[in-house]
Length: 204
Image (cartoon, rainbow, N blue to C red; front, side, top):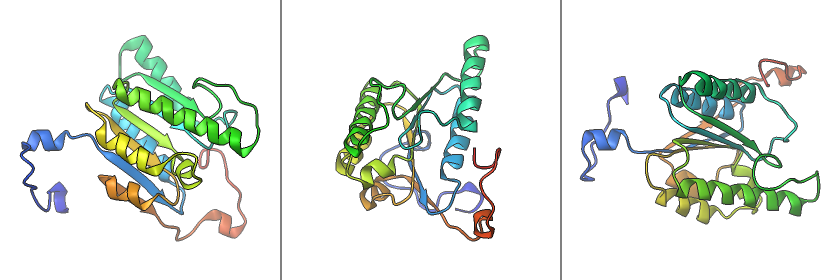
């Protein structure tokens, strides 16, 4: 796709403007770090366009504060106070949906993931956000907590202008097939290979 030019123009009956503004399903997968980082970079662009941003983190602990969360919560306050950018909602498994769970069994975590997905379905139905970041959502699908086929079906049927970004390793083939944009991060070098642990400002 040199210089941003499309390779082919599909015979889909859409105008150039309609095709350009079609909502996308984006998947960031692969073994290397950077999947969520890239997703939040896209969300930052969306916020600047005035989009409503909804972030749903499926594996990270509700107690773990990551830098992106603090930054986007601050941007949400900027929007509330000045009208700049768009509104932001940030939810993590075990906090912010419709349940409160203590650390428990795999069944507890599976139920939490299903409830999180049910809430996303409700929001898609009412077109609550312009951009959804479903962070580490590939894992509940991989572990069988959420049905891949159902996710693909619901996302394919979503109405309005709702972009969806899903991150995590081992994305299901059906999800990759349904997506409009897929990237896979590949490790060439990593500081941990030389015994260096994660650090502030890089990993969180």
